[in-house]
Amino acid sequence: MNKEDDRKADDADWDVEGPRWLRNAVWPLMGVLAWLVFEVTAQPGIATTVFCCKFGWDDVVTAQWLRQRDTSRDRGIVCSWFCLALAIGKTIAIAAIVTLIICVVTSIWLKLSAPKGWMDQQGLDQVKKLLGWMCIPWLMTPAAALLVIAGTVSAILRGIRVWIDPEVTTARRAHAWPPSCVAAYLARRAAEPRPLSRSQALDNLENHAYAVIVMLGAISAIVTIAGTTWCILDGLGFAAASAVLVVFVPGLVPAFLIPRIIAFSPEECWPESVSEP
Image 1 (spheres, one colour):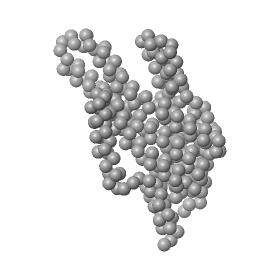
Image 2 (cartoon, rainbow, N blue to C red):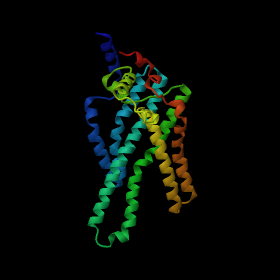
Image 3 (cartoon, rainbow, N blue to C red):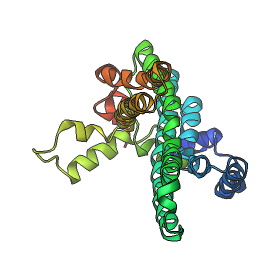
């Protein structure tokens, strides 16, 4: 066995994905679970969100793998928080798109199939119901905020700068260590030189930890403004508006701490991968 074979054999002990039959059964299981949820709740938004959790499954497995496999325990813990937040972020984004499509199709079908005058009598109630369906995926935002805040606090206390990109998941699947983040980053830079007109912020989106903080901040800001406005216009009162602020405003906090926790190049987080062949 050469050095690479020894490393892969060692990494095989850290496989957290489970048996192949279980990995292949995840999609059908999520479909069945989503159908059961719809039968119980009659809420397409909830059922869609449950089914779309599969899109974040890879990041959940990667988070567990990092906690077990990373040679730097502090880095593995910090990065795992952001992987979990990324999983919820993917679920929210895809579920929101699917729910929007369902709402548009449902609206068209109701309009075409409704008797004359029906939309005048019950249209407002149906619009409110459809808006409720569309809002359901966004209710996962506080969970993502808690994970990002946990990762942010952990990164500050442990002195870790975070860089997460697809190479981390690729390394898990290949049973390789360390992830080839630096080599892949340099290869992308060599193949696609950065245009002078492109901002550094767009380049930073290659770091998924940065991307999830920016997305979370944007969602939190939008939901906070929309939610408080809805509470005021709908007559729900100051208490309901305050609840929206308490739940969603914390999602804005990590965005102000980006310079302290985010790595702006992969070698800041994965220095050992610099020397990898």
